[in-house]
Length: 100
Image 1: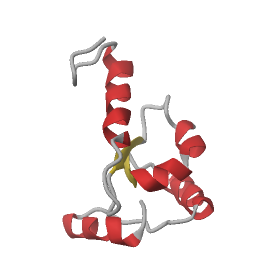
Image 2 (image 1 turned 60 degrees about the vertical axis):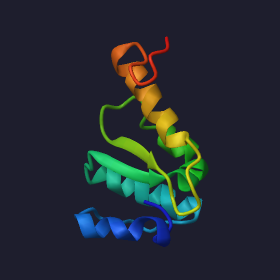
Image 3 (image 1 turned 30 degrees about the horizontal axis):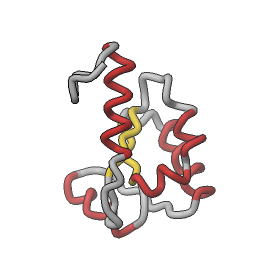
Image 4 (image 1 turned 180 degrees about the vertical axis):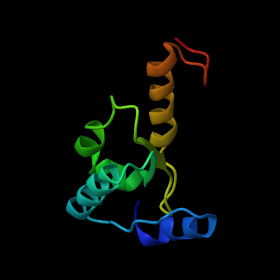
């Protein structure tokens, strides 16, 4: 999920791109994907910045896994930070960087 330029190529590998650029539309689309029982939802880091509260609603649930990906505007590092936090919650320590 994200802006067209960042996500449209994912259709080539069998993923369903969901174009959403404004926060209201994106929040509605995220709710739709959750209601349709998607297990993994990829969201561009830029869009995730606008959806922090909505994404936080699903943080303690096992599904869906919401994975932040860089968009065409570049990598902010939030995706890696998010994965790191999820791993720490799941196993109790940081196995990615060996801290904690």
